[in-house]
Length: 229
View 1: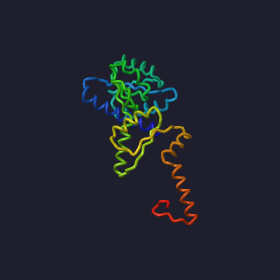
View 2: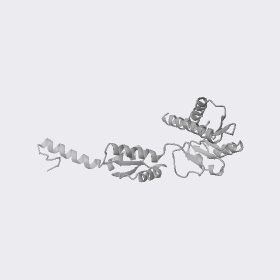
View 3: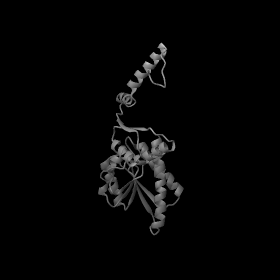
View 4: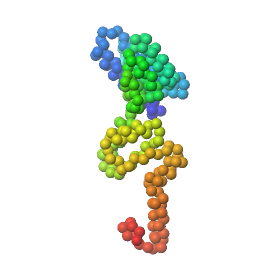
């Protein structure tokens, strides 16, 4: 639900920006045509319909009949995304909001007459005619780094999930130019993650030390300065 609300907010603001820019630069044109490519059917239809509703809400706020939206269903499929884009091109549209997911961008460079405002947050392998507007890894890492500096946290480790986002996250960490204490990759499977966390935190070593301290306390042996004597 949170993901849908973020997308809706981005799409809402984007449409307002498009409209404001068009009023300044294209006053001679009677109608501003904007394409919209989102999944309106299939497993991601809830997201697509939320975006469409956000666009309709933005239009009602703008209250100007000189802007018209042309929605197309891409079924969250790359080939159907390209088909929808070509249909919009034939209708004389030059700017398109969408698609949402990075996987659907791969063929869009074939439609050079269109500019796409994608809601994806990935920044790698983006066609030249696509502008990504999602909250990407760079912005998230910069936010984290700013928080670390503000709170004066000196010993920070980073856990990066082994996934399709791993390279992008590591690149963002490098670009932040912040010296983290360490950066680890971890498996997203819970069983593997538990063992990796134990290794990272020296769990076995700390457990043995704690057991030794308990033994010394029970035997009445003094422990000086936190060290075992």
